[in-house]
Each structure stands twice: as structure tokens, then as C-alpha cells.
Image 1 (tube, one colour):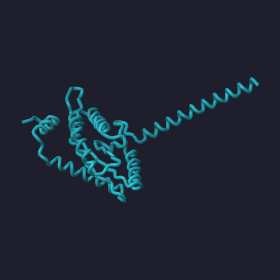
Image 2 (cartoon, rainbow, N blue to C red):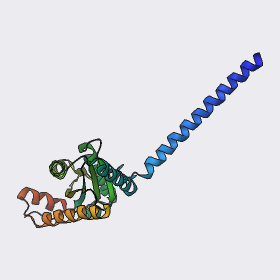
Image 3 (cartoon, one colour):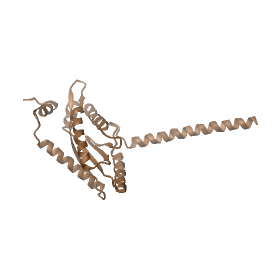
Image 4 (cartoon, rainbow, N blue to C red):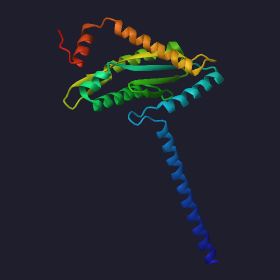
Length: 213
């Protein structure tokens, strides 16, 4: 009888150990899955995560008839940051961009680093009018909050251009991305052509270390 009790306890301990190991393996696999779709520098989704999320939202839109939008943003004059202050400061700028975007987004939105200094935001359950209002607010937040201080105490301020479009049911995802890209390039062209206010011009000239006259 005693041997049987000892045997049962031993089996229970073995089962508990196996359950712990299984739980650890599940946690490790989940961690690896998260890492496989995450940009290691910024914590945003990487391109693999972007494609998976975009396909999921396309399926949801076609199934439920709910709108969704996508925005691309590109940092203006980012190359001088790396050239003047080094890649470590450039990396801080990229990390700050994602921080500002995530703080400004809803839980259902997805922030993506597409590569270099280009980012994307997927906005579920959002039509184009709502998306444009949101992007205008986001522009202001970036203008106010996208400042990084170097080790020498220099404040580096970065601006961004945005392109946004709404997905149309039945559209091809490649064409959708091309449409958003085209909207981004139009925004960048307008940004280059528009007349900056004196204060904006002063900030940009100081950022590029060009004497203000």
C-alpha cells in the first residue's frame, strides 16, 4: 500500500515537471514568434509582421465590410542626422519615432518599421476621413515631441511627411501599398515646395548647422 502511495506521488511530481516544461516551451515559442515579427531596434513590427497584419485586415474588411486605412511616413532630412551626429543618434531618432507613434495610436492600430527611416501605421475600422484627421493630429505630436538630445547637448529635431489611403474591398494589396506610397511622395513633394514660416526655417537651418542670416 505504501509503495503504491509513493508511486502515485512520484507520478504526480513527474506530471507536474512535464507540465512546467511544456509551459516553458510554449512561452519560448511565443517569444520566438514575437521576435520574428518585431524590429529589434525600435520594437515596431518588421516587414514580416506588416505583411501578416495587412493580410489579416484585408480579410476582415472583406468579411465584415469594415473600412481600414494605412499610412506611410518618411522622415524629412534624416540623412544629415547620421552624417552630422553618427548612427547612434540616428538610432535614437528612430526609436523616438516609434515611441511617439505608439503613444499616439489606439491598441488596435499597428506601428511598422518598413525599413530605414520609413514607417507604416495600419488603422483598422477607420475610414479615410477619420484617418486624415488622425494623421494631422499625429503630425503635430511629432513636430512637438520628436526631439533627441545628443551627448554633446545638441537638440536634434526631425519632421515627417505622411501618405494615407483607405483600402477598397476587392483591391490588390500590392496596389494598395503603391497608392499609399504615391500619397507619401506627393506629401514629400508638397513639403519641399511649400514656404516655411520664419521659425520653421530657423529650426531647419540650425538642425543642418547652416548659419541663419
